[in-house]
Length: 225
Image (tube, rainbow, N blue to C red):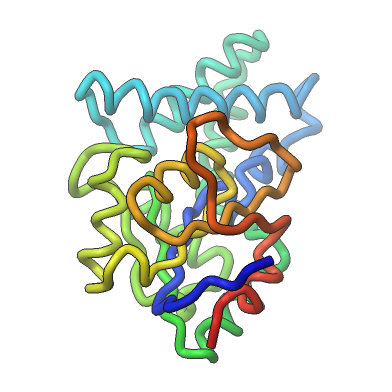
């Protein structure tokens, strides 16, 4: 696999890339008849609502989007347990990070590569996730879409990382496990690494990431010194 050249910073999507979005339901799986189906639908609707709200110019912060998506998933699966709903929302604030993440970030920092998060998450949600995973000292910046009130893959979101890091798009490696996010970032001009954790097919949108990995473990080796 070809290496990425001229990279000065690595910017990471948060949910699904650094943090396991299904770990919230996993904490309470015994209380659900089909935990996998609930978690999958919750995530699907969460993403759909971000796209729809951006298109309709009806922004609300990601915490509300997450709650609305959960309500849809629970109602679909005929779950009406309000205490479970509250527990699942709180669990989303403490998502597990994927096991290779801490070391990968440590190696990047040791090599002088700045690391940042660029996420749909609200500032409070991101702060909670980073603190829970004990990754607070690994990031130069944690960037939320909340100040501009649009969601990925709107190009204005990716511009936030350029403005924060004061780099050209081509100097930034952008990592996402979400194929649609990887495409959006590539269109913007980042050198994109698609972290294809689940063996998904590529999107048919006419553009491809610069590299594809199964996890972040091999990311440091992908970057030219």
